Amino acid sequence: MSDLPDVKRVALGQYVASYREAGHGNAVVMVPGLGLSSRFYKHSYATFARAGFRFIVPDLPGTGETPGPRGGIDADIVTAFMIEFVEALGLARSLFVGHSLGTQSVLLLAMRAPARVAGIVLVGPTGGGSDGKLLRQARGIAAETIRVHPGVIGAVAREYMHVSPLRYLGTWLKHRDGVSETRLSEIDCPALLLLGVRDAVIDRAYMALLKAQLRDVRVVELPGGTHALPRGQHADFAAAVIEFAGNVRF
Image: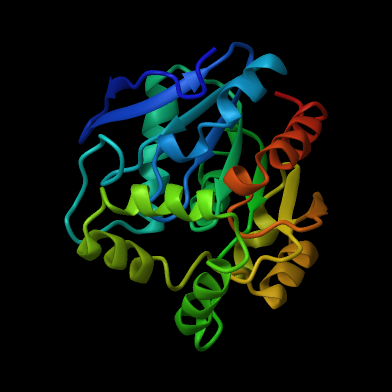
């Protein structure tokens, strides 16, 4: 199997969405991080397929080959898009994996469409509404550039070449407030909080909040892991998610 499956397309109400998938069985659906498309997760397709899962990554509006607003999108738009996307693919219950900014929409999915969510995985969540959040994240991203393998930096750079600065910045700013912390206890599906020990972007206070508020949460911290776990530590990332998925009731 090729590392990167061919692009597929599905017509939604407002978009013709592009996506990639591999494998059969219970669905594991990835919600990408800021500015990242289905290309970025190329190392995961064959791994999940071999483990007996159907691994699916859509290009969110404005990334990959899915069109989107020039000024970026917020978590509500992503959540509505994801609900429409899984309905169009005929998926019943899936495990949703959010990476970085994508974790905000995964949390909202668990609240708004619980019947479709068998479980959630939050990989390097960037939520939380603390003062100075954007500045802290910007500093963290800068620190990441000296912590990750050059190949990961190159992969991210190639992704961002296909996203306009206005769309990238707009999406980042529109995700600033995050999911209301008071609603986290509404989520009653199993959750995995997957962190890199060397992740410079996440807010450790927010991680503590997630641990305290989510009803059924497991925490895994990967030694040496950074914010780009699905690419830089893809084997460890996949192993942790696959183990968790094996205990989820689809």
